[in-house]
Length: 331
Image (tube, rainbow, N blue to C red):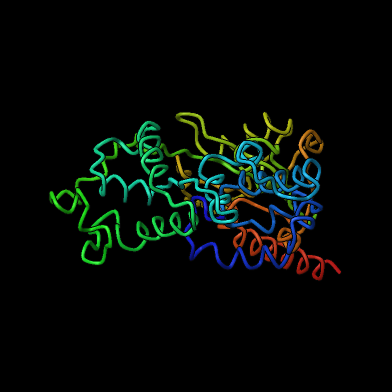
């Protein structure tokens, strides 16, 4: 959970997750949907899928015992150099250096490494240096100390050099280059995509579908839709997307919401429409369901969808009220 997410954000999720899945056996026995629901809101859902798959592999291939050999542990789903070094050094006292963003910043300033930290070669250089000095006793504490030093003292901007135990031997401090190191190349501008979504309603229910397990937001549930083509209005896009994605015709009744959401490498502007279905039901290729809005909370959804669910619930509540009034008048 701490990979790519801050401690303050993780802690409530961590406690609830352990309450829901107190042992690796229980986690491995759970369904992926249960795991994704417990993870909902943390983002980077591939981590949840890989964690679940890893526990199942440990149960099946290692008799429920986490492998301690680096090469075996490294092959588990979702385990890269960072996770392998963090878990095996902190959990099993193996002298493996952890290299994350905080550690890169600390070491580059400390040792005067003027290479781009976004390059793999820089990580390799930092890892090589740390491999020579990491203590055999308590290597996990060493790794945690470096990560903590970068998190609370050796800050990206205005580092607290007066509080740093490495200050006497720090290249950046001695040469007045703390604000110049580490070097980091500029990233390309983050693209912004316009996306049109359809909340297809029928008989007080709304249509939802499940994303394929592999890929972005895999295994989560969503409303049908997709990116707007260049020059295409969101209203036209939502009709086209439903036709192409589901093989059905819909009519956009009302624009429900406009939602902005940022992912790690791109941003989206969601244009959400309440739509009416014409003709046959959607194809059953993706898993799908017609649900009441009070049932939606049982399904794991991307965070962007949660931003307009209150408006959808209010719309459906109002629609039910109006239908009841019309029925009363007729009666």
